[in-house]
Amino acid sequence: MIDINIYGILGNPLDHSLSPLLQNETYKKNSIDAQFQKFQVQEEHFENEMLKLKAQNVKGLIVTIPYKERIIPYLDELDITAKNTGVVNIVHNINGKYVGFNFDGKAWLSGLLQHFHLQNLDNKNVLIIGFGGAAKSIYFELLQFNNININIANRKIEKVKNSIDTYNRIFTLDEAEKRMSEYDLVIQTTPIGMWPKIDESPVKFSNIKQGAIFSDIIYNPPSTAFLKNASQLGGQVQNGLSMLIQQNHKAIKMWFQKEVNYEEMQNLIKKID
Image (tube, rainbow, N blue to C red):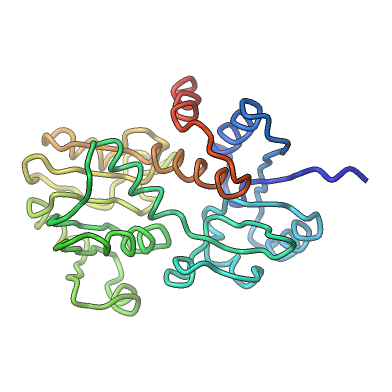
């Protein structure tokens, strides 16, 4: 029996996912003997699909909406960030043990610092919009910086209060709109504005701080209503493409112990943009 090294992305929907392109083209360029597939799974079939993937000895997974939390009971171990956040976005089959990792925060931060040529986020006033899986990972990643002030805006305030230390200010979305001019960095982490509902935004605002950065983890569409709002007011903007590329880059490095060229992965995206 031929042992094929199968990797893939697990989620639903996956129609517009760029990870298969990034992974398979990078495998070809770097002579990596593996295949990367889409595992688009309906929620009612999730348990059966997970058992099937493990029986097939799938080597690694990128996990996306809506399974970042649901996958945890099917894993053997979690890294510290996955434990802290209760969210997994990368799985690695290590000698038959399925280990869950959370690279969302690291991938987002690497992409942001590189894009804006920043060394750190010390002394920044930061607002995170939403508090799902990616937001939690980004929140914990931000805690490393000196004198950083992190506020969170969410539709359900109690959900946030039950998840983190409440010395950070927590607002409703309406309150956050009124305070937008306080922030050096605003991070939009909800799925609001994602294709096909491209005209929607979790917040609408008319005043921002001069030089403020607005980051949206959505990459389809490339410019969300949230980013357009910020750009029209003179804000610096960034979509989720760099986070996506960083996630795929970090996954390849972990799965294959191989450092592939990040710029080549960026160029793959530019070709189809």
